[in-house]
Amino acid sequence: MRKVTWIGGLAVVVGLGYVAGVYLTAQQVNAEYTRYVSAITEHYQGIAEVSSSVDSALFASKNSLSIEFIALAEPVLDWAGTNTVSFDINFSHGFLSSSSVLKIAESDLLERLKAYQVQADKAPLQLLNNYSYDVFSDQLVVDGEVFVDGFQSDSEGVSLKIGATQGVFSLTGQDFSADLSSAPSSLAVADMIFSLGTLQLQQTGTAIEGDILTAKVALNSVAQLQVTHLSARGVAGGFNLDNVVLKFEQRIDKQRIVFASDYSATELNVETGSKKYQFDNPTLVISLDLDYLALLEVVQKIQVLQKKGDLENPSALLELVGSLTNKGVNLKIERVAITLADDTLQGNADLKMAPFSVEELMLDRQAVVDKIDLKAELTLPKQLLAALPNYDPRQLDFVVNMGFLSDEGDNYRFTLNVKDGKIELNGQELPGM
Image: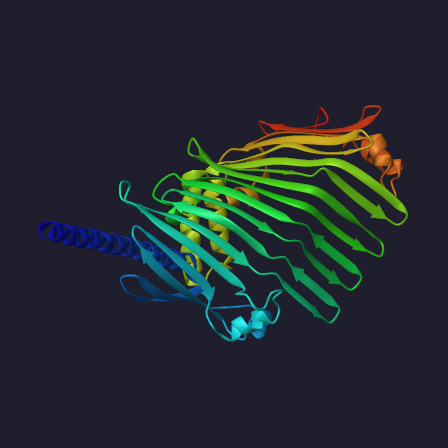
């Protein structure tokens, strides 16, 4: 009898422990959902009204989320028939874990979307989340999957195909990561055909303070976008870019926020009339850095203007630009290059702007020049230029005679240096500067 009692007592304890784990997870997930809604509400201030409802129970909850846009473009509003997008989000809670499914709610908008879907028997949008509660860090770990179906439309000489997108992501306190891929897309308008190949996006981000939902610009982030090809073709010719890679990085470095990007491709093929050209390794590596605290202040001011619906106010926008220039702006083009038949056009530039105001830029040009520190250089191979359509070297002779280019035999060269208010073009100081 005692054994039976002991086993029964253990079952009760285990049962209570399980229920407690489910309850704890449900509470954490509901709190996290509330934070999501708050973040969305703040993001859409002045653009849309966000509303949400929660019907919660111990083992499940049925939530709804609606975003009502304040001012949609007339063509979009006419097509959608509504300015509101609503979602159903159903949660299932387990022991220290939970899952949710987000879909577009049943509506006329959903039926309109299904009319253009590639797979109309599936939901056009699905977001599947799995939540696991870490009792030691008191954090939720979110692992998710996203699926957006492909769409196609044919009407009045326009044919549009948008490839389906799917992938995974994770969210844990300060960290975020995503890995998404999209099938090829295309657009045919009249005699032009635009094509976008398979797309792959990988991104990671870490908030410096707080968590990723409320970080604003206070985060380090790295993203890479790869596209198998990008092309446009018409009656007169076209172009095709192969293996396009775009890399983006945002980082905080000594009270400056740095935005760096690297654009590259393996080939650029251009066809014009009867001529075809193959350019190899087109590249652009560029970075911009601004004062971090100034940018953070600008972001906050933009949110205020957005809330007031005052983003189109020119004077307010000039004030925002001035907030950044008053702390100095640096721009660096580490490399711009493209190769044709072993001849490479290449250049670089390094610009450092001391703090200046928008008023100075408009009223006192020399005062701004005094604050510029610039080194720029560009090399133009003559054989590469000769291969271009309609090239006439006599046109560049005039530019050389004017001093804007230096003739160095096989190449033309352009150099520009600005420092201490003096401007030198190809080694010659410009008069009156």
